[in-house]
Length: 473
Figure 1 (tube, rainbow, N blue to C red):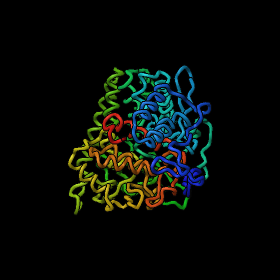
Figure 2 (cartoon, one colour):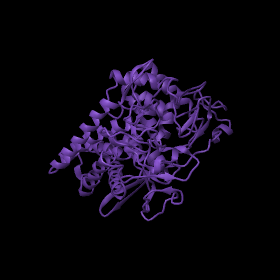
Figure 3 (cartoon, rainbow, N blue to C red):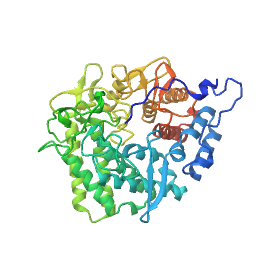
Figure 4 (cartoon, helix red, strand yellow):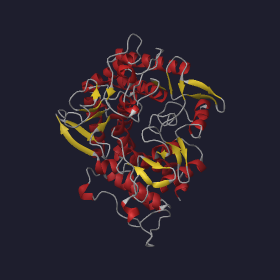
């Protein structure tokens, strides 16, 4: 992914419209129109608009209501392109300020809309189109993480990346979660709608490729077909050891050369991603079962899930002198562990959100205590913000997404309220979430247009609205 320069202040900040308490410098108790005008929106959903109106009307914190109106529909307003191709819905979804479709981001961006499908058949078709487009991407290259709409377009990385780059692929960083997210999306979509039509022959072909790729990256017999190097000064953008990564002892875990941040792993066994793979393979088996006639594939998915799960029990946990037994972020099977967490999902913090571990699990609780402390090298606490960041942007930059995830996985009202308060302060007058925000200066942020952060913020607000509305007073 492209490296982002810091944006020092927003347009509203320069105009003297800094927002803190919901009242502007000019004294008017209202908020500016920052959402894309109706005529310029890519897609309009009546169900989404109804939800926005309900939350704005019934939420006492008017600034939170305004942020929800801006952020929750941002994916639909600005990033989707829907059409029918060969009689099937097809939806291309960009991340925001990068004109490419990440398998991870596109899944996460539309995920919160799934519960509204029964109220809006056009929205259902849009999400169905995302699933269909992702299937085509996986079939093109299961090792790639991001794709272009134009299948003949040559990547901007063609001069720097040493890997088997195909036309139509934007970036070819192998990340386990890139193949997990489309399964999660299809499973959630079918669970909500009962529409099995997405489970066509192409979908089955893509899922067979997922199993094949995961098996290759267990590396029991050899390093597999994937390697990646990039000519760059950024150490986190390249893979050492001729593009195969540092050695890992085969144990049943799946190697991932990159994290969901698109940064290279240090040790190839990325623990949160392997947990996500277990859940996804179980969901895949369930979908195979619903389609019928795929006993071989069902057994393969279940067997692989069981093998990875057993390997996690044997290899993912390490003792910490302060927190007791905790999950490592990465390991190599030789006894080395990388203790940290990253803001991008899958993360250790996000394991309950992904359905991998109950939020009450003792190991998770101990790991969570570590992750949300300054013992985690990528937890940053300042005068304005406190949360997890990561190497992708650098020191002292908190990712609002991590604060959202902290809130989504919390059962403590005080903690949820604190997350809401920080998120309310971090938009720097823009009305939108960003990729990262400086811990001491919210006017210093990266990515003004980052749809995943916007949509997942909306998901969090909607969850609080349903379950703990009083916290939005």
